[in-house]
Length: 307
Image (cartoon, rainbow, N blue to C red; front, side, top):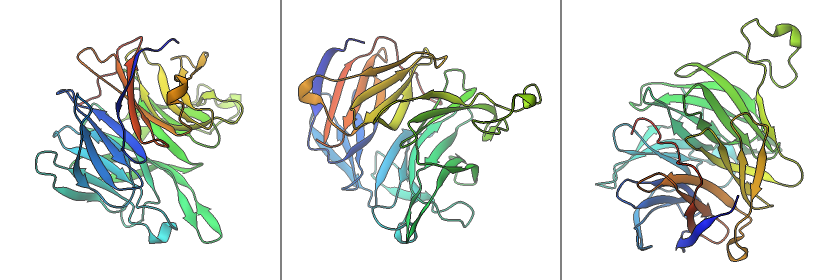
């Protein structure tokens, strides 16, 4: 894939994550290390909306026009973090904790989220270190009114980015260190078709189980971060170590690694979103250098519900 109209949008963003392109041409970005929520205007000027504290990781605009944040709670052992789901009023900069835990069970490190057409959202919990061990992560579903959150898939190895197919029937997530993108069939809001995992027996086919769960696996040293799905169903994942983007076709058969111009190669190419009037402007966060870049995408991005 040849990138056109590649440009630097802004710098000085810290460990940049969670870009959200707004209809007014501005882009919101969080700083995982510094705790800030930044607003980048069309001219590249950067202003702080609010400091969220902890470790804001993923962000998404909700059905109410508020911004929802996966906050991993900052560095340290899991038991010392304040991992939570936050909600931000962009007009007043007021921040509230929507979910401090899952029905009394603490989160480890919420990472990324995506809203569905029903107005709820799926999110990943990356997991976090504990003394002499590691607390594994999982996939959750929650409603935007603060009344319902549930763990749907557990345990998982460092689930990171999360996205939905254009028809909303397939949920994808990336796992950083296994270098896999997993897909699962969505049965209903907050419900996935049962799965026996990657090694399920063929005898279960036709029995109502989702068996084809590996969408793509990457070779070599590449590690996977957060994702966005475009309007034609291509899964686009920020890629670490061998930096750039990994672009996976809707059927999972074609996997392309897209590198950036030399001056923008960044070992922590963390996240992508789509914006602009035709949704063909891709915005990508480069966390090692604290930059936001943009370029022309060959297909329109997916207009995320419920916008």
